[in-house]
Length: 227
Ligand code: ADP
Ligand code: ADP
Image (cartoon, rainbow, N blue to C red; front, side, top):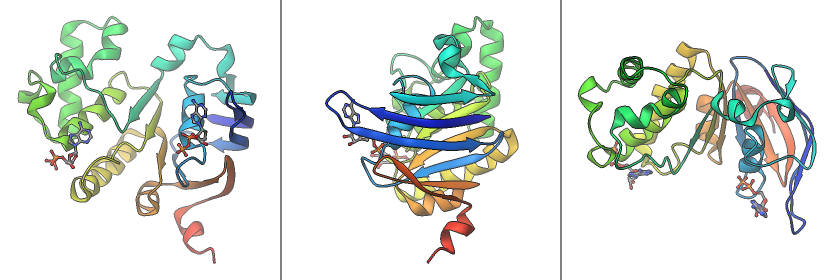
């Protein structure tokens, strides 16, 4: 579903943030990129939705080079969740969840029904539809950030430390909830963290990065059994 072929990124100024990544990610896989701050995780994610262009190499989604795709369509086909979720404070929860469906011209009824269905997935009832972000807890807001990424049912979701700002108990709960959700929905997920416990809990395969390079790829069991 997602392939990296000799992908590198050198920023202006000369920092080689990503150094020759080669990787195949299967449909429905939960992949977690892990490594210390500055090793190139976020750069890798941003190259997938072309917030950043590769300096060298190519990325393919379903065997199509992302450079050949329409950039607007590419971004709409990829859900993106980051730590600073950035819900719009003047929009209701229903409106925040429905940003992409609205761009896709879904009817009001369809958008609302979809938002309600998504809220149910995270055990929030429809009374939340018309509330505003500041009426929700941090954990609830982060759930909405995840739902927003799922709204138009994209096949691929990118998550960059989505639970990083939450307290440990909220984070544990969300991780569990989210792993179940991923298994139910069968999405391909590329997830970034610097927390090995989180990686082990969530990943089908873990990709370990150091200084822009992929240094190890394996299942949590394989990674744990390394000396
Ligand atoms: P991570 O997500 O693993 O913390 P990043 O991908 O954010 O790593 O950064 C990788 C390297 O690229 C770091 O050395 C960082 O300082 C550098 N970097 C990130 N963004 C930019 C940028 N816009 N311009 C120049 N250097 C950058
Ligand atoms: P919950 O009630 O779901 O546990 P809290 O409101 O207690 O959520 O917030 C959990 C943690 O997340 C707190 O440490 C808080 O500072 C942080 N937090 C709150 N709002 C946000 C937000 N919008 N984005 C990221 N972190 C947040």
